[in-house]
Image (cartoon, rainbow, N blue to C red; front, side, top):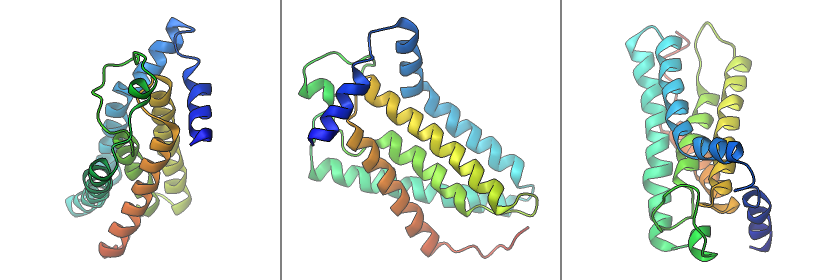
Length: 185
């Protein structure tokens, strides 16, 4: 936990040093999430021309998100009520946020589930390497959101790592129970 607090202090200490940096952090911590989701939806609509493949990949990702964010995160909120940094350290965060349990980050659980699901996408126009590159771009976007949520003071770094871990586990579970049977169309 000492490393978690030290890393939090390092990142959050930049808050309030620049209006531009604060604005970027606030945007990446909140509004950016909707952009990433929107880009994902547009991507699936453009990558797959037939409805079956679109539905399959939306369903695959939706199940991973539901498992990660809707099940694992909610279960852990119930089992372990970890205080958010702004509540534990008694400061005002840069974004308004209820003092709900912090671990794991729901935003990280959602965005990393989307990113990790891309590793399993296939079509006949893109190679596996291109999908891995795309997945890495989405992982970077999820990391940006996570660092920003630490920066604004609503999460500890461990909360972000926990969200990523549960997203990874969720995608593997969905992959196990929803194997690709549609072929490479």
